[in-house]
Each structure stands twice: as structure tokens, then as C-alpha cells.
Image 1: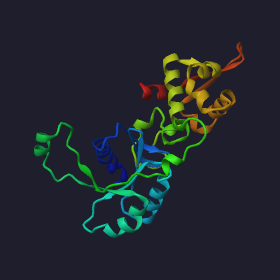
Image 2: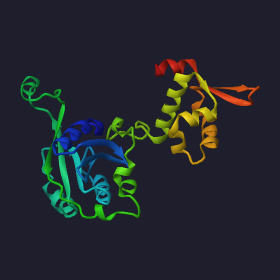
Image 3: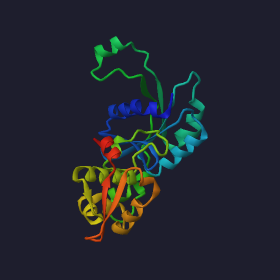
Image 4: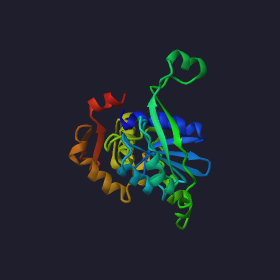
Length: 245
């Protein structure tokens, strides 16, 4: 069982526990759920080790309820829970294979048959440290929820670096979509019509120009100089346009 396999059952469990929204990979936390005014964090690992316990300790600075999710094993984690997790109000979630037959599952559930299911082994207790981590200004801006972006629902918790959508990749995707719809554009036109560029860069024009010149963008971006306007015209290469369509 991979960590990414655990995300969907953990997500469903948090929704059953009252979370209205559940996201993957927020501030490097595997799973984040919003339950009313409370934030729920789940750190997932294939084994219950000190690395994930350390991650959960860090999560208590941000989440009102913090859990660790691991595959269910035959042995008990009673000692580890009471010695290392309970003192920090951290709960424990088990993920296991769905032993219910698909036919029986369909009789009592409307949702598709899941390969894995998650259950709470030990409840997390309310963490009083998280609400105290307020800074001046709006709490939404500085708290955990301030890091939830428009694309957050597309990320899968437990994904490795490079497999998730980031601010940069989301911005580039928006630029590609704009160029696909408009055919070609100048730098000023892109910045004007793709607002996320100005949100991503403090100096949009200089930064975007430098980004377009990087080698890793050569495979999708075509640049042509317009000598009359004395400007660079940007457009998608034909093979990239086909991918987007």
C-alpha cells in the first residue's frame, strides 16, 4: 500500500467525521480537512515510525485536530499511542483492505466500491496550541487556510515532490490555456489577461520574461520577434497545443 493509496479512504473518513472540504498536500501536510472553524491534519506513512511522529508534532502547531494514518497491522500500537501520541493529543487512523464483498457493499452504499477503507483507532483531542498561533491581521491569511489555493482539490495527499500542482505549475498552465485560446500574445497581453502571473511574481514582466527564456520551457513555448512592434510574440508549439486540446 502506497501513501497515495491511503489518501482517498482517509479523505472519505474525514468527510464522515464532518469535514466539509478535504485537500491533499497543503503546506507539506499530507491531508487537511476543514471542519467548521477547526482544521484537521493527517500525516500518512506506510509504517508508524519516529519520522511521521515528528511530522505530527509539527502539525500540532497548525491543526486543531491531528492524526497519523498508517496501514493496519496485526500488532497493536497501544504503547506508541499512549507514550508518544496521546500526550500531544494526536489520534491514530488505520487504513486496511476492504474485506466487504463488492455486491454487499453496493447494497448498503451509494458510493463506488473502495479498495481500502479507513477507520479511527484512537481519537485526536482538541489541540489548544493551534488557535494561539495567530499573527496580526486576518487569521485566514496567516493560518493554515490561507495556504489553500484554487487548485488544492486536485492534489493527492502522499504524492512525491514534482507530482503535485504548485503555484508555478498552476500559473504556467493558465498561461498555456490563454495562448491556446488566443494563438499568440505579447508579454504585456499575457500579464493583463492571466491575473495569476501578477499574483505569483512581484515584478511580473521581468520575472515572466526570464521564466520564458529558461530551457525547461523550450519544449512548449515558441518565441518570435516582431521587428515592427519591437516586441517578442509568444505562442504554443503545435505539439503542445494538441496536448492541451
